[in-house]
Image 1 (cartoon, one colour):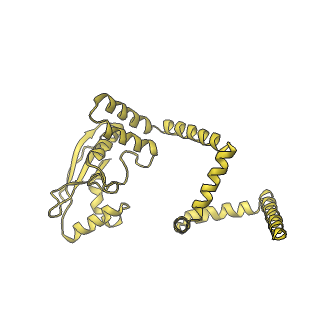
Image 2 (image 1 turned 30 degrees about the vertical axis):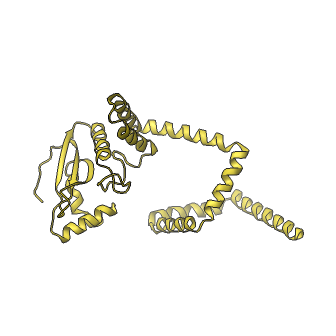
Image 3 (image 1 turned 90 degrees about the horizontal axis):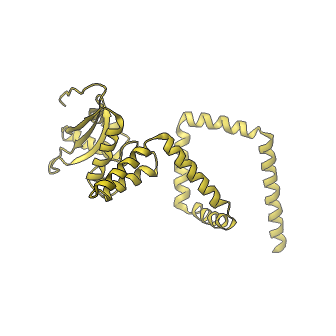
Length: 243
């Protein structure tokens, strides 16, 4: 791959295109970065966290092809690059959502920062024809990128959910639904696999073992476990008498 000089301390948005025969160099990834970020994907292709990109670069390596990188635009600040990135992802669409050709797994910017980003991108796509509505969608995306805004939204959501769960009828209905869901074989299997992956991480295992040891030494916790056991056996005896 040819060396490209990138202005320092500048953010930019880039597109990686598909060099494989018959693909007509369609965009397969939109990203935001600085320095040599755009050219790092192919070098770490076999270790890429994005499975679709990992397979793509593996095939390109077999065919001895370099994926062309196109720098779309440079920006003086991260926020403008964020807006351009989510707009391009909305324009080209994602493979996982069956809306386009991109291997991106998020809608851009900070990606997994929350549902609000996804809503902002959806609004930008739906309201693209209306300039004023698009401006409002972009303003919303900027707001969502602010950690303080996300924290406030999270606080409001938690408050709403606490109010809902304080209603006995809602609590009863929600508890029944959750129990039924947790009994499904596919849900139990997914949770088991997820837990095994977490405990494979040495840092996670070390931290949680320490927390469990601390919890088990707690007098309050032991009393709670003892009370739960007594309650369970009392209910079991009642059921046996009823039979």
